[in-house]
Length: 284
Image 1 (cartoon, rainbow, N blue to C red):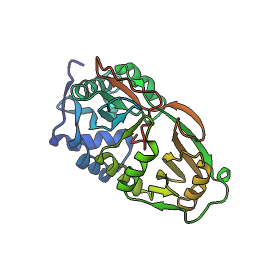
Image 2 (cartoon, one colour):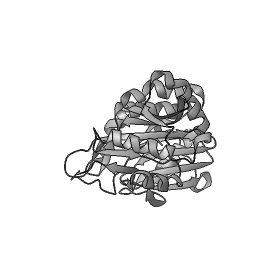
Image 3 (cartoon, one colour):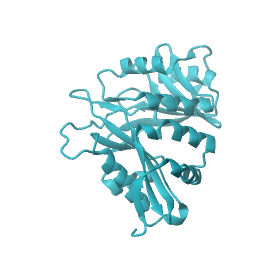
Image 4 (cartoon, rainbow, N blue to C red):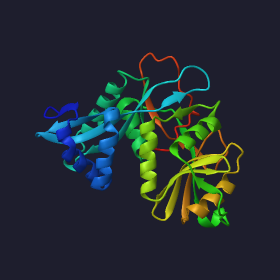
């Protein structure tokens, strides 16, 4: 790594950052441009430069406030979208970029968070910077046949502001996160690209994202445990072959609990984050 320099991003890096993102994640240029226009200004980005150009990058976004059931809220930064040029992988560059992001984040917040996009990456982040699970999710894939007859007319779109207020009321008294406005607007942008959005069903709520023949219910909040009834309402508005359903571990829902969000806490922080913390509508 003697020939690699770690530094903050600059606007002139944008073409290379777009190339790195496309190579790693396969998204279109318009989508990446929208991300770069909206979110890095909320935090920052660390790049690894080699041979005069970025060969790895990761973003640091101003994250949610974490609300334990008791005590003060905790501030976070969210490290996101680690991408390394295939020709430079296997040299520890991605690890170095992630560690630099964590170090920069913990200079100003209580916790540096990361949400691995696939199970195989949890071990990488845990080893890279001693990240540990601070949030769990109950998650299950459910087929259209298992849901049964769809119920028309109950799933209604709501604004991000309405969703925010209803979400806060439904989660009161539990360990949860309050997403910053930039997260809400970006999540809505992502969901609406493919016909999803924020939805209310008789006062309960869901954040829905379509993905080909699948519907991803990134957050379903129903304290009464009528989640299958909610799915029947969602199936009428969002027809799909199968549904991914995510719920907090402290509310009724399908599937098994698994680790979700990882975090590195600021040294000396005395207010722990409970394992039952609900992160929210993904942003993975």
